[in-house]
Image 1 (cartoon, rainbow, N blue to C red):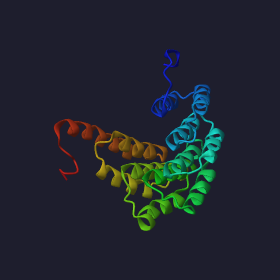
Image 2 (tube, helix red, strand yellow):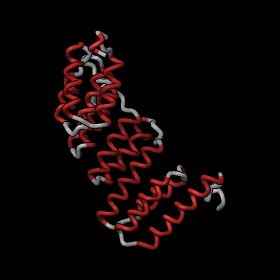
Image 3 (tube, one colour):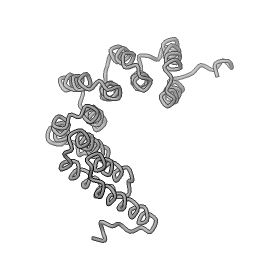
Image 4 (tube, helix red, strand yellow):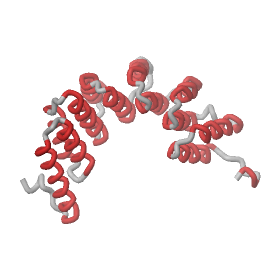
Length: 228
């Protein structure tokens, strides 16, 4: 493109950054970042936010923070991206600290912000904190949890169950998620894994049996929940 004398615009850089994030490649990411600076696009929020995500997926949360700190008018995507960057790289305390800082700003959290925070709680095994954040969504911000939030909660509870052998909350959350999304195989497998980790092999086999039924019903258009 550049060899033909065509200068890349912001849309081009957004596309390239999304592709680099899929690889991911820190070297390619830094090269793209250099071109962004050269072309004068680093002050644009969509570009900066994409850089934050790209660096986090390349394992360089330090670069993510550097880009974030350089954003003059940080929007909800900027904050959500940096929180997710820390969560993705296992820096749970830092992610939660950033969430607390964000709450003191004028930027209002959205569904993606809370998903990033719940992801951090899940990776850190912080069940009580995650539960408080989950309730905070609706009680303080009027945001209705979506499927992704329920999935993150179930993942968090199942991780805790594998660590502590307590499946009570994990079971309840997983069953709620199965009611909401009965055709998603990942939901069944998540609960089955928790059962296996807790040594409850028969229950795990039962859940996998329901998974097979759900796949059959998906083809026939019938739900086992509807069938009682």
